[in-house]
Image 1: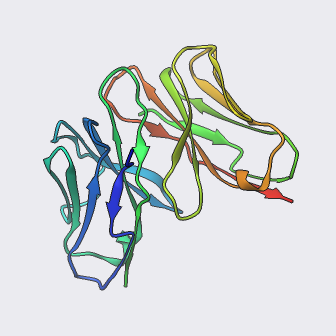
Image 2 (image 1 turned 90 degrees about the horizontal axis):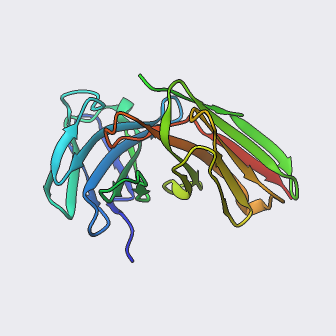
Length: 114
Length: 112
């Protein structure tokens, strides 16, 4: 079975540019999570969706960040405009509904903003 | 809010040694999960625990859900070089928000 798919794996962009990260969750999973990982702050939850609806976006750092989930098999995280402090690894994770909380992570997108 | 304290932050051990790490929570958790992250990859789920006192094994890995429901332990027996990585605990409390709280991670290095 295919796991969570993220693209691109690496992104290098200049400050001020728009960045779009993409995620395809595991088929049949109802929840989708976007995380950011840095050395200083560890793994931070940015936003999560349930049945394509954003449930909690309290972790989104600023208005420059936005996330969408137009259907059950696709989500995007957009940063506009990007800044050097946005450099991090961004992970997407998904899980099935039910009594367990097991999240399955994608390989991540390493973003570098110069 | 809920917080997790994971210790130790890092470990440097000899191949063949056993390893122990733990997580403690400021509040009661209903689920504990342990993940491993290899360099350049996403965290991979190792073990999931759902009941207080539960002891679960996955090969050389054994994890326990603490009786108080505020802690969890992960043990690795007879470590090998491929055990190198960052180990994260994660938990979910009674608020049932669907979110996981993650520990800061334990970085494990194994000397052949």
